[in-house]
Amino acid sequence: MNIGYDKPLYIQPFDHRGSFQTKMFGWKGTLTAEQTAEIAAEYLKAALENEDEPRALLIALRHLAQAQGIAKVAKAAGIERESLYRALSVHGNPRLSTLVAVTKAIELRLTGEAAQ
View 1 (cartoon, helix red, strand yellow):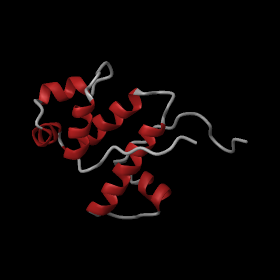
View 2 (cartoon, one colour):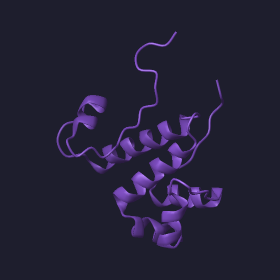
View 3 (spheres, one colour):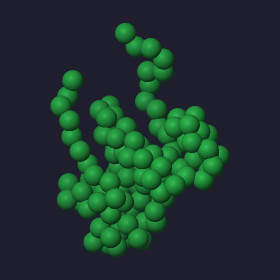
């Protein structure tokens, strides 16, 4: 039995109005680095769980990389900036090694769990 909204939900984790952090997490005011990391991790986790749209992972990684600065993330990942833009584009088809490097550069990790 489904309760509530049953369509894909895309949330920008860095909401300029602050409504995301207030309503979803109950935080108010300026976020700490730990709170920002928690939001980013939840955003990536939601993208990984979206089985209907595999591009959701690329979109989420692109948003997270843009939030930290594409050039900074590309350098930390050991990837050319232009290559990173291409890999995380709507038509991107990155290697697993690229995805791992990018998630490591944004201080997150791709994880798996048993399907239910």
